[in-house]
Every structure is written in structure tokens, then in C-alpha cells.
Length: 154
Image 1 (tube, rainbow, N blue to C red):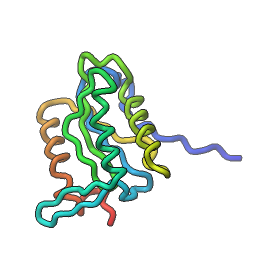
Image 2: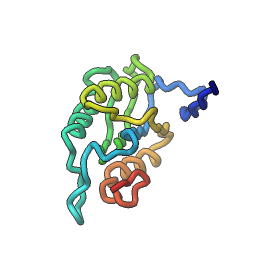
Image 3: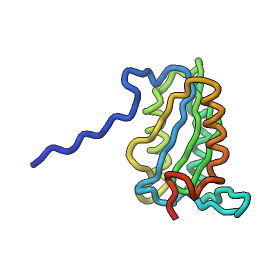
Image 4: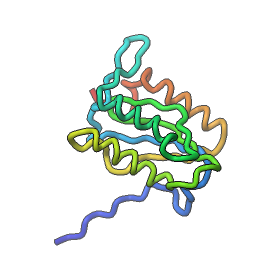
């Protein structure tokens, strides 16, 4: 029997993901299925969330209640992915970011009768205010560009 291929580690090498900072997170649904909602609204598009999409958003916004020192900044739940900025403040003494995201994915998966999320997630350490503001704009305007989005599927 052959060996299984190694999964590529997409985290920054030797970076402490438990230290205070701002992180841009993208989590995609399994096989990029449009499970979380649909983009509607024509010239003023928005995401009409499905029931599971509403539960995902509610649980994302509960993270600061569960884990001290976590702030969820702008977020958007799209049909097949979620974008958000999470801030780990100086008061955060809990889980490193990968474990926090793992718990969020695990909990929300229990609310869905099938596989909800793809393996892993994407993150970007936000290094300065200019980058932060650009990512905020990207998140807030994501529904406007849905058909041009790299995650778009009809």
C-alpha cells in the first residue's frame, strides 16, 4: 500500500498564532457547495442566508462570549464560504488561532447533517492599518462582486 500524500501546511512557519493581532480568515464549505445562502438583490446585492448560514453567523458572533480576548471584526457569510477578521487582544490567553477555528468548525458541523466544511482554512496575518482597511472593504463588498469571486459557483 502506498503512502498518502502529505497535506501542505499553509500556516506561517514559526509564527505564534496565539499572540495578539488581527487575522483575516476564510473558511470554505465542503466541495464549495452553496450551503450557506444565496446572493440576491440585483443592483444592491446581499446574501439571503439559509438556516445553516444563519446558524454559522450566529455561532461566529458568539465566539467573543465563549473565549476571552477575542473580537470578531467585519464578517460576511457568502453562499459557500465565510470571511471575517478576528482580533486576538492582549487579554486573550486561550487557544491559538488554529485550535479556535477548529472548534468553531467542529461546533457548526454538528448543526448540519452532512460534511459542512472543507479541510483546513485560509488565514492572513494583517500587518498594518492599510491592509486592515483594504480587507474590511473586501469583506463588506463581497456580495457586490459575487459573480467575479474566485469562490463563485452557480
